[in-house]
Length: 154
Image (cartoon, rainbow, N blue to C red; front, side):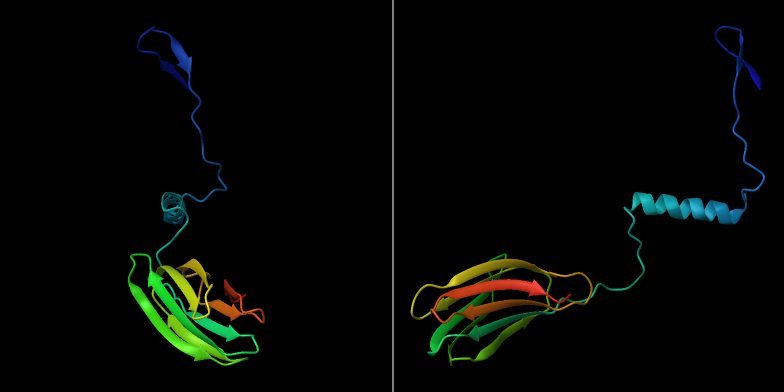
């Protein structure tokens, strides 16, 4: 197709793209293009109306030592608010389900045995995608040392 060039009074060849005959040009194509554009603009996320699963995070203490220990466990939110604080004696081999958290956010767990030492860790809930449970396990080792780890279900 030739078009007059406005400034130099010459003709220019302009290639006009055409749609191949086998490509549908219906409302469906327009809708698909719109959905792709929305997907690109939103980063690939689409609102489905479904709520994200509530995190389910358990703080567990295991005493692997041969003697009892007096232990204080403190869970704090990132703003310094104490979410849970409890002191109790844990018998040899005992497993204590300290608390379960279901609110999203950043937390710190601090464990202080009466005998001294201790451990601390931080985590952000949810730790895992979807509805998988997560855990922070505090272990009092046979040496009396305290070990803290966070993990989640596969």
